[in-house]
Length: 226
Ligand SMILES: O=C(O)COP(=O)(O)O
Ligand SMILES: [Mg+2]
Image (cartoon, rainbow, N blue to C red; front, top):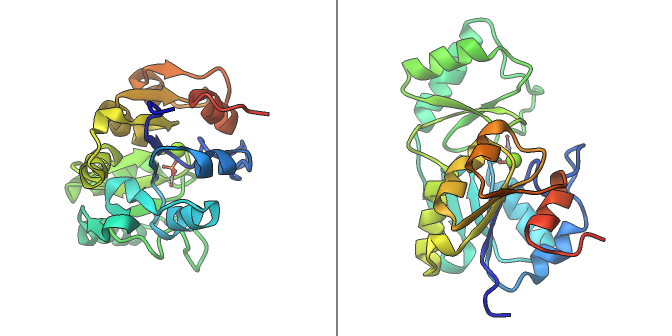
């Protein structure tokens, strides 16, 4: 087949099951996809790079909601955003008596270079107001609150990746589940939300799958979901 589109795929809520584990059925599908696969996630770079490595695909990654773009084949490693402002928000939030909500050794933020993530069981309103004071915004992925620059997005990252790969961003088929995928959906030619997606992703998608989570992903790309 020559008309198989390149894929821009989210991780949490899209390649996972309802418990957050990667669904093993997605792995051979990603490995054998005959066009470039770009992993676009809110997670810090080591997670998606590790995923690509162990799936056995080229490292093509948009991490930190677009704050980091990494493309192994072109030696690209780009950073966007304002890490100092995000760190200042985290400090002010803790100073105000709140917590980022992770364990003492914080593997969520340890390798994060352009934004800060806060656990969703922590109060959102003060985080939003402190972020706004620093010119930043809070995005709720359904897995964490991410404090990021408003001009950084997965969609902007996809434009950069597409440029590096010499592919039209509109050629991409994007699959995702939450508001941090809306910008990807806007840039890609075809946008599919899995059925468990939040309202923002559902509204931005061209179509919505019948199935949830990884079943939805496999349905979205027309893969056999046995
Ligand atoms: O890190 C998160 O909060 C969500 O990650 P995702 O973008 O892969 O769904
Ligand atoms: Mg997601």
